[in-house]
Length: 339
Ligand SMILES: Nc1nc2c(ncn2[C@@H]2O[C@H](COP(=O)(O)OP(=O)(O)OP(=O)(O)O)[C@@H](O)[C@H]2O)c(=O)[nH]1
Ligand SMILES: [Mg+2]
Image (tube, rainbow, N blue to C red; front, side, top):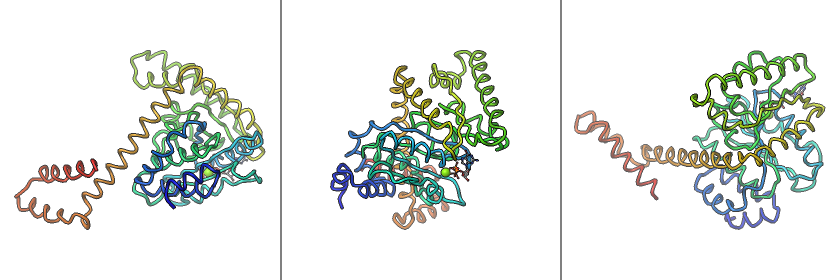
């Protein structure tokens, strides 16, 4: 089936066509490019929400609750579950925890886990393409679940309009560990497992962390670059803290109200436009990274270009120096990049 045919079928609501397009884009940047150029005009309609936080904090369970809330309101929802790093459980397994709990009408909920392991980079790029395909398929919202935040391979913050950071009581020094990454990236804090002891204490800790961040901003003023970035990103928005019990759904309606409030803030403050620009900037960088990485691999691939061993001999014999050899390989990469 050609891409045009699949796109046509997806537009008519064929879920298998959507799945197939995602698999094609995931597997191969050339297919991703072909799909993306056809679909780009149809994107930009879905609201994208990132859900991130430590393993086991309850992300998938909460996402399930959000799905059922939205489905009740007649929204169409796409979910992408990414697990780029876990060497033990694997993305597909984790993704399985997001399930369709109820029978939603056909086409209302679409859940996809990223088969990310064992690939040469490209997870970030593939995730963005998957989100775009779902967006083009006509969903109202796309939720992206991923472990960790900030220093991650998948920086969901650059992808989502609203990023939720989940914390759960009793997870030790989690706040400390997260601190570096989350201040800039979290739009809403979710203290999940509110049924556990220590939930209110955790809320208190996050509040003081936010107070501290504001104090630092005052002290450093405009000079501090990091603070400057944070100020721009957060202008007029102090991340609220929502308590949820993802098992029962308690607090999920209030969380949804907070997400809508953040969305209004983004639109009214002009932040939305800025976010979009930085999103596309990051997307272009990801594409370039993957393209360059592939070309470097190809140029170095001994089975394809058998000249490296010979070049190494020449270097060993002092006929060529490593810089000159690198220049030659670099030229090849540049030529391949043009095509
Ligand atoms: N008591 C309680 N348990 C919860 C709550 N939310 C989730 N859990 C449980 O916590 C465990 C982990 O939940 P998941 O939703 O799989 O967590 P996750 O963050 O998606 O985990 P990973 O995808 O592995 O990072 C499961 O056993 C859930 O049933 C909650 O609000 N209260
Ligand atoms: Mg999960």
